[in-house]
Amino acid sequence: MTAPAAEQPLEGVPRVRPVRPTRPARPALVRPREVWLAGVSIALARHLAWPAAVVRAIFAGAAALGLLWAGLAIFLRGEFGILPVAAASPLLYAWFWALVPRETATPDAPLRREVPVALALLVAAGVLALLVPVSWLVTWTPLPVGAVEATAAAVAAIVWTLAVDVRDERRAASAPRVRAVAGGFLVAFGLALLAGGFADSRTLVAIVAVVPVLLGVATFVVPPLLARASVRSAERAALAREEQRSEIAAHLHDSVLQTLAIIQNRAGAGTEIARIARAQERELRDWLFAGTDPFAGDLATELRTIARELELEHAVRIEVVTVGDVGAIESRALAAAAREALANAARHAGGDVTVYAEATPDAVEVFVRDRGPGFDPDAVPDGRLGIRESIVGRMARAGGTGVVASGSDGTEVQLRMPRARLAGATGAGTGTGRTSGTTTGTTGTTGTGGAP
Image: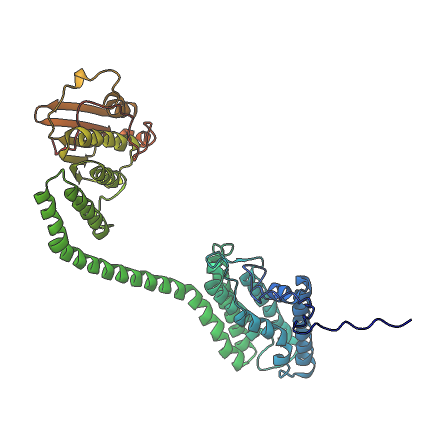
């Protein structure tokens, strides 16, 4: 039996090689935001496809062996040259921490650490401080073991709270307390070293003891000074911005705003050109003078917003004047009633409408006046609820009063809310400050008014 002949490739047809399965790409070496310490171990574990516990155990075991080796070398043979080799694992961890980037999927997400690093460093400083008396009793060295290490651990805890914990949502609140404890530890530890150095005639110890004392005092003195300097810098920057804004506002007021005012006067209040010019003027004024009006607050801002919206919807020009602390007043019922009055004025009277709001020690009053043909409030049919319910009724339910006066020279709506009822008026009424009340075609007009 003969073997089958090998297939010969057809002439002119390219030979196709089988596709070999490729290995899946390794995940990028990036540190996550949900971490224990810095995210180095979990980053390496994901990149190498190892369990995170194994990577953490390698780092921790290497650090423990290095510490044990260094301790034996120092206590038994007095050799300090072994310290760089013993610190290889922490240095490698720090190298990864510095060079491995953090994941950027959610750059604004807060960092969350499971381990309180600053507190752990502070505890380590306390443990290292306990080695000082042991070193004094066992060996005679110019500088006892643990003095520099305890100081460095406490300083590291302070630096950690200032540089890292302030951005950690779990540690930000406790960071000042940890920093204060670390500063107190440095002062107490330095004074203890200073006393021990003089008592035992160790000049080097006495000199070195001054360092933790100074660092501890600086912990309490430097942060308030830095905070004060930051506040002053922010105030200077805000003042510079305000001066620049004032210069721009003065220039635009003398040029663009004056031009827009001339366009409105020449075009007439009811034209489309005048409406566009008024809208542009209000937007420009809001941008220029935002935050400069001491009364720019809830009710004052609400009235201006209502006026701007109605000017865009109707052929009307509305002027808003506020006196007193109107900006500090919040009353949904008062704002909703004023909106209904302004809507009636814009819908039925047109032309020029004025709003005058005044805050007195006893009450807050809003007057809405137009210059329409007027109407008889008593002749309004019962089915028309715009004035009866949305203005007068709403104010009455909130504890205030609403009065509508109309004549041949126009209509004025007077809204008054006692100061004692302002808190209750916030939730009164059926609409919010930006929602007009129910109206079914009121025959009268309302307007914004000058002072009575």
